[in-house]
Length: 166
Image 1 (cartoon, rainbow, N blue to C red):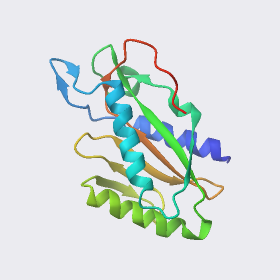
Image 2 (cartoon, helix red, strand yellow; image 1 turned 30 degrees about the vertical axis):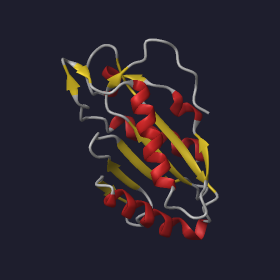
Image 3 (cartoon, rainbow, N blue to C red; image 1 turned 30 degrees about the horizontal axis):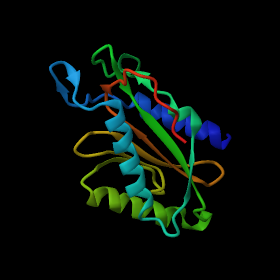
Image 4 (cartoon, one colour; image 1 turned 90 degrees about the horizontal axis):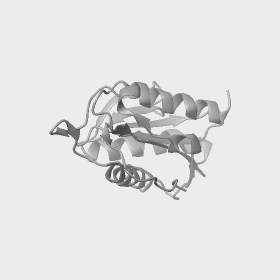
């Protein structure tokens, strides 16, 4: 299975795991799409901050697509979307994957995030961010590259087109 296939599966699992709704005020998500993107960036930056030397983030381009909340199983208003981003963490030596995963897990726990699942090796981890309940995943590809994926809860969609992330 290729690295792209593994990341695609991880992103699908993140999306499929969307069950909890984000905070809703007056039947509308309390967070906007741009706020969700900023929060995802904050979660990713914090995650990679514990890795030394810092890995090179390679965006998994298919993760740039947002989905309507109804397509994710979250329900929510018609103008709501779920945002996901996935990145390869290039530059982490194969022999350090377990150690790096342990550092990330510890960091997530120290930040108050909830670890929901971990593989027997401890390298693949599923979690929920606090206080906003974003789904977070750390995974290893078949090529022994770590990846991180973050998926928002249902958020209010932008009304104007946004440039793609790079």
